[in-house]
Image: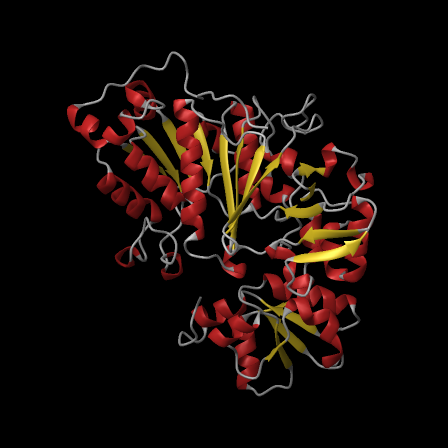
Amino acid sequence: MSVKIHIPTALRAYADKQEVVEVEGQTVGEALNNLGARYGQIKKHLFNEEGELRNFVNVYLNDEDVRSLKGGKTAVDKGDSLMIVPAIAGGAPPASPLRADAPAASLTAEEIQRYGRHLIMPEVGMQGHKKIKAAKVLLVGAGGLGSPLGLYLAAAGVGRIGLVDFDVVEFSNLQRQLLHSTGDVGRKKLDSAKERLLEVNPNVRIETHEVRLDSGNALDILKDYDIVADGTDNFPTRYLVNDACVLLEKPNVYASIFRFEGQVSVFWAQRGPCYRCLYPEPPPPGLVPSCAEGGVLGVLPGVVGALQATEVIKLIVGQGEPLIGKLLLFDALKMEFKKLNLRKNPGCPVCGKNPTVKALIDYEAFCGLGKESSVQQESAVPELTVQELKKKLDKKEEFFLLDVREPHEYEICKLPGSKLIPLGQLPQRVSELDSADEIVVHCKMGGRSARAVQFLLQSGFKKVKNLAGGIDAWAEEIDTSVPRY
């Protein structure tokens, strides 16, 4: 029986850039195995060495998680479709996370005029807007998602908005992070964000936390807020925010973005699943590209962040059906939304019946990024600094410079003498390389090239090194005329 499998953006490079692939199979497992047999690189992303589906990959038959059915043994019928939902990032009755004994907030005459379009909505009204003014919401990240979140929550009159960030504004942020402007480049994001939000609404209180959120400070920071909105772009912080919210019994309004696609959900362990129920384990380091490497459509965080803000306000006023137990997928290219059902995992280590995670852990190590991580040690590759590469070029040494970025990136900038073989094509084009050559591999920032070096070493190449920091480090430290993107 022919089954259509929808390939997510992050994996399309390994499926000849196809969005939908038709394979034969009587069950979900047969269909996925046939997909893996056709595309070996996808098989490595979907299955572990034991042939089991990886924990950071979910598969949906129509709109149901196959884990809530019969897993790989689930039968497929004519017209069924499978959707692969990797980590990048039923509705419950309405309820507000605000304490029932929270003091009521009054509205001034100026605020009544400002929020008039809310006040005349029966679903909000005076009582609902008093809740909005009394609410305390923490935004983790003041970047792409944090921008629309902060702007709309401030405009709505959320009384107390917390911002967690420790970064500075860069030119590359301006394409999507509308809290910041050209004149803010080089400033702390928290400073420009606070200034902009108070311009939008001077009636709100903006609190800034200029720290890297970690296991030592997360509980102290999150405990004073009613709702946490996760706008992070890395897995350690995402799992940290999830676990802290579970331990503090707070809702986590989650979103993630990549290229043209976004995800939104509300993880509230007291009323439904948490993020770990969806993705029990993170992907190995470097397997899922960040927005810095994979790119993101500038308006995408505007759409997805606005959806996050909508969920926050619905939770505050206690109206509608929040995305508890639901995962909303957005495809900007198709202008298509799809809502999938999530199930609470009874065996979840943090929110299950017998939790084993009862305190915050080392999330860098959990995600394979810690200094002592065995994953990192196994994935370590020989490296070359940009300074060492310059010396080799200056001395006119003989070596092969391999660029594993995509063709559209190669058009932006390139290193002299480099040859382009995109990472996704490397297994098919490895014969174009000579194992006797000394090879230096680079990408934009070093992640994809590290995976390329691993592949080449496993393929029998001996003299291969990864350019640490990639062409971005070269542009910053060696040749500032090379454009950064």
